[in-house]
Image (cartoon, rainbow over all chains, first blue to last red; front, side, top):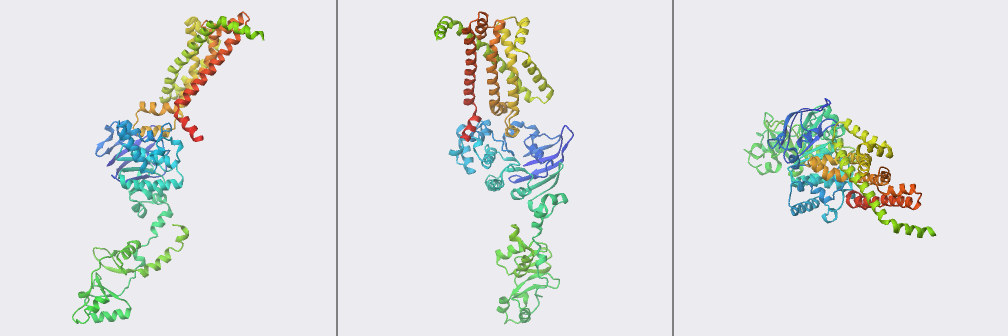
Length: 380
Length: 222
């Protein structure tokens, strides 16, 4: 785990690049540092391999203060990928990938095996590519080599400084996808710098948004989209993306607020006539305090119909799935489709179980049609 | 057609002298250039590492001044300090070789993509490894072209070294002028030109063999 404590960085010309940065980069996740240019995101990343030393404050890797580690040996333990590829143009692909293992004095046979393995990992045939020079490869292929070169000596931390920003959009998408699937296998702690919000939202497990040397907000992409901390974050995310996430309405908007309910003390014959009148096939059972108790489907009632002493309390079944007010419709939709439910009750909160309404497939369809009229055209 | 047989006769008589002078010429020129390399290339590298621009521009100014002194004048200036003969000649030519070598080494290393340097640094190459494994190989074509340029014109200027008694092919030309012998003049001139061209060719081959970058580039173009 990487921890930054009270980091300040002031350059010789007095520029305050970082002010009191306190961060933790989660192990085994893709941590994305994002912000406008000059916000200090790259500076923050370079603190980790000591390409930049803080003016004040400490950086710890697994509890170890890195200012006490020799920078050269520290860097050999940390993978590093930069924007403009940074492959060594006078070395073959093999030698490029083998740089750090060679510095670490691995056995030649082990290096050979490792390079071949890595080339296979990114779908470049070792036989074809290992003896080529970087200039003979496409931009996307070059950056694949850049990525596997960082992985070569099996570091647990990888720093990536806008690695895909110089690529064409198609290669960029491909490499992002590859990075995500690669990460599933390798589970490294990745610190990824970008200024591209789409990229961040796509690959990040955690986003750290910076501005003018300060951390403005950090959290999962979902959290940042849903709860932007301030106007800067909103602006940076962009109206369009915010709308997309806001557009998913809460269940409150689609639920039927006055569905057919009955008290548990109601007799079965009474219940049948109520159902007849309201043309429903099950009753939602709530008590006098409007607490949700369960539901009574028509077949359960008919089964016991002959027993005159029975009430709804005896035949009803508890709800296995309820949603709280404010839950996105998509969650309710998910529940309904995975559990084959005709409807889901909405409660004020899971604790107090006060019944407020019910979401049915029918109610949802109507809203979907209202809210997403031009979805196909926008290509969202 | 009489002059051809005359010339062959001339060569038969004088070839040992000519070969000795050719050897001297090569010795003076190469010695100056090698000395120049030993001095200018490390200095050029050092200048790229200095943060103070003042030192760099001072070094270039000094090298520039040497370059502007007329050859004959510089050779003459050497006499009071180093006397006559090979020593002052080699020293003067050494001074001439500095600027192109210095400039090409400096700009060669400066031309290395900062991204490459940064990734080398970030991967854990120390300063020495960066210089030997990254900067020098990448600056090599520049340094090499500086070396070729220097060698070619030092070889031609070495003919003037004969003026201060250093020997070399200049001796042939000077004595040819003295006794009005065309054979001597042409032989000296042609050999000096041939030597310069041959050296350039050989260095060109060496450059091609050692430079991986140009190799890779020519492959992509093919």
